[in-house]
Length: 166
Image (cartoon, rainbow, N blue to C red):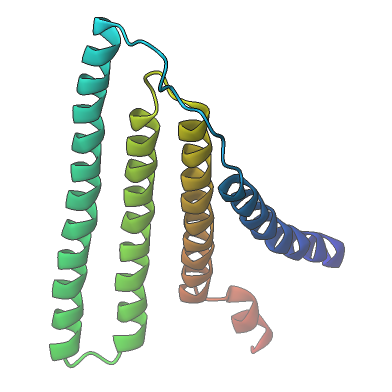
């Protein structure tokens, strides 16, 4: 059991470090010579326009999802603030966890938007930029998910402690 815990803590340390290292490496690469001399076909031009609109719609969806969650979180927090509940900390933690879940969903929408933007005839630099953006957002999502899991574990009652106290 102890060996598993030490392995998990090692993975929790190495995974973010590897992602950060990969992000730094991708950002340090600068591929010269894009698609300046390449001719585009009319179909490619239309696809770029359509995909551009789809990517913009995905970004709008991310903004709506995150904005709605922020408004809902503010309303829930104000209700807690003005109520005379003794469970203020636990309820505030619940609002924070709900907002974290929706932020993770919003990050997924923004990653989808970035993927759409590079879907039609990407250059090497476009692919490197996409890799860096996806790595950064994956890193943010990783820490956000880990924080949500830790918050949910703190909220759960621990039955083992209750049994030992009897």
